[in-house]
Image (tube, rainbow over all chains, first blue to last red):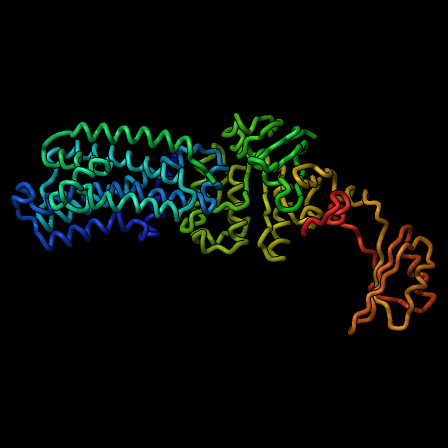
Length: 245
Length: 308
């Protein structure tokens, strides 16, 4: 436990020393918030079901942070660690793989939560963002979604041979999801066919889950089931295929 | 002497490639045990199997009485490991590396004196990527000694270091042995093994070609001896062929230098050659016996040079 705490703390410091790696988690969501906030403001409109643009977007931006951390941030970080022989050095010490992986989960969740806190703070102070109807459940849902996408990240890091390929595949998965799932753009502006297609994208379930809890519609159990299933399957695959070198 | 490592009929393949064919050896407590051989001979595979990082196809390995496969955690608490091609995160500071690795072990020595001892006292706040090659190596040695290990593995410790840093590193390896620790030194530098190792295992193509002290291996060579000197112009070296025991005389003429003579033979070659030269009033200042070294032992044992 002491080792896990120390490892997580060290990883956190490393992230702060190389802040460019956290751009998509900490900065990009804020840029979107300001961009669309300055264009559309946060006045309720019928087009968005009576919600303002910012209120309609923030749960999606939170989902976007979860997606980018799991599909891009984690796989690149782990692949670089493997490629440079850092995992090799750790492995020679009397530690379990769980320590290295657990610290990665912890540090990525922490940085994600910081990014979300920025987003909510700026949203509230600049655009009068409406806070979640069920704050504790929303928090739980964020953690649960975080686990599911981090487990996908482990699969990418396990199956892809290099950091370059992990980055390419991660981005190829993330960007379509960002545009189609309702994370980066409101689904209200998408044609019906694309909305139907988005049901095949895992990030859509994170958006649905968070929006439901944020607007007071309760738990979306389909989303819970999909994300839980994804966590179990991805964990099984990465336990089987994870390589230290 | 107690055996700290016992390897019996070790075999390890990667697909169709046989990395280790069949190796048996024992390492005794308190010795520097050299494992030498060309790149790709199976040295690293052998030691990584001993550490428990790789699973052998067959054969048994015992380290400190433990099985590296089933008792890996317990064993690694007692080993110090410096690996080839290992690294640390670029932005990790020296002190953070030591502090972090210290949290992995049940028992550690204080890391501040360790840093000073390895000449990194003023580098404690330096990031890993800003260390020189020699400083990185010393940090890895410090990490390997953090848990006061009983057995220390050093794999290609001096590769990439300049000659001065190599010499300094050799001193440090002796210092580790002098603390009573057993050192496994893997290297493809024969001079390094000859200089440091109490016993040397020569590995070639996945097999143990020889295992003995460097002196015994060199003395075991039945190659006779070689005498060299710088001659003077006009001296016909052929007269040395009459000297008792001489088997061959070679003369190398340089355009600018005086001729270099090489005499091969057996018996008290140096004194006999000196006597003959005195007859011709030639007293070369550099008359000397060339000693055989482990490179020649390797050549004699395997039929090929250690470096192609």
